[in-house]
Amino acid sequence: MRLKWLLPILMLVLALVVVACGPDDGPVGEPGIEAPTAVPGTDGEGTDLGVAEETASPEAEMTAAVTPEVEATEAMTAEVEATDSVTTEVDATAAVTPEVEPTEAMTVEVEATDALTSEIGGESGINEVTFIGTEYAFEGPASVPAGWTRFTFENQGELPHDLQPVYLEEGRTLSDVMTALAGEGPPDWVKLYGGVSAQPGETESFLVDLEPGNYVLISFGEAESGLPDAAQGMIAELTVTETDTVAADVELPEADAEINMVDFAFNVEDEIQSGEQLLYVTNTGTELHELIVFRLKEGRTMEDVQAVLEQEMAGEQIAEEDLPMDFFYGTQLSPGVEMYATQDFEPGIYVFICFIPSPENDMTPHYELGMIDQVVVE
Image (spheres, rainbow, N blue to C red):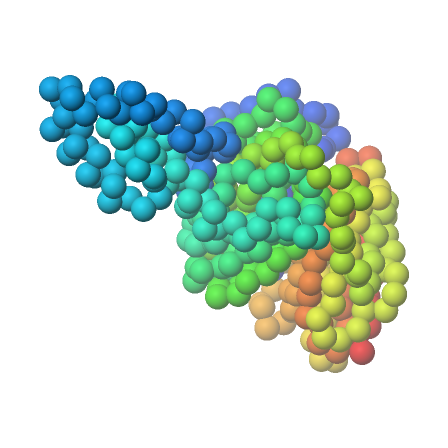
């Protein structure tokens, strides 16, 4: 059996890494997969629901009361009165203002979004947003404000899934991403903002600073069929809107340990203790990097890990029970991106690996350039 984590990594490299051959000038080939249904929720246009401003004057209401259309008006008013969310004045206006009906429809959409959004810009200045994952879709808001945002990901599916926000260069769309995933053209117009993986029934979260623009949410989890989730439709659009919040207004948490990825090493500040740890992960290098964490099985060593990597790169099949380590955590960050993530560590030996190939070094995997390390957790 091939390593289960290898295909998602290779798919990520194929679709989202800048290769030595240079940038992609546009979509390559035809999409091999259907674009997913849009995420339920708000249409992202920030509709103002100030209906009261259009309320008819008393004179207008008196006129409506004596017109031949009064019976129809009263019937329509009775329907509106059944809704507790509107006033008596709005009831009268609804009878004569056709624009109210589409406004009420948009209200329903906004309320659906609010149900999935815990908090926008709370006391700490951090936006809180929740997404639900199933086979194979994301459920959540279509837009969030820019700035530090905590993503909470609830996996209600029966398989492991990821939530990874990917920033798109201006002018690029979800269709471009789908084409890139189906073709062979790794684009240079994306920026990875970390992410989190969740097992079935689990809830995970991470905190990241989002810039305004267009994003897609992607899951690279691998189904039993061997296809990544994104290839089966688990990809959705997300708009990050401008905001007045500034960095000074945000109260960021204090991390238990810092992990800085550079070209080509993991710099770990502070010891990682057992138990729940808040990690502050950054990429101050010039290339895309990833933090893939494994926990060594009892009695296994780094030499065993190196041997497996050589076997896998040679195309050899390895039984899962023969692997010297278990997958623990993984995230990818483009240069300049920083994030916080909470992980629950058990005592043991952990291995940090970056599998991304380097376009500046003949596509040599980063771990062969030094991005492989072990960390002892007590």
